[in-house]
Image 1 (tube, rainbow, N blue to C red):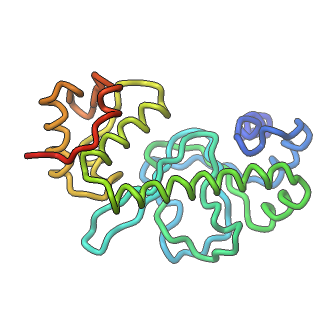
Image 2: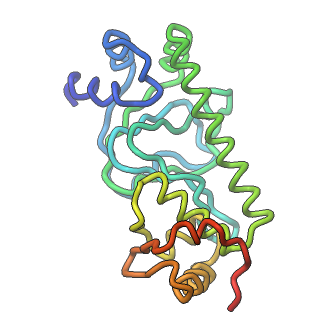
Length: 226
């Protein structure tokens, strides 16, 4: 990748938003960029974690696998975000899978480069802490939903979160994808979606869900009745 293109991408990363053009150039010299095909595993559990990833284009899914082979999605990384950040707090091994969902352009920084960046650019360190704090809150929210929420309320929360993040009432996702996000079986998600469809709150198409009554969806908390 040409340096000018890499710098253009880096300047749009949220954690670098406070930096000058010269400072972004310095970071560009520390980062190595590569294009990865869809389905590439970037890291897996128990693999040594010594690099920080910066996603420029594409999407990356971070997930864990249950003993019975079910996928539990921890998060979907969108362009302009970092991941693999736990290496910053001394965790020497990854505890999840990271896989590209589509062709993705990724910049990689090794541990020494990241440490140099943090020591010389405190504003980046603050932004990195903000990212880690946000993801910790999201993890706590997911845990609370798993512990205390029924499948329907968790499904609605997920649909509304995707709606807020992408600012659209049309959500492109499969039943299997929703099941992976929630950590349940596909059949359970299909039953919950059918219940919402019968109430006129959503419509279901091929790999697509349309939110028809967002205010009413936000009010629902009762369990699914089959």
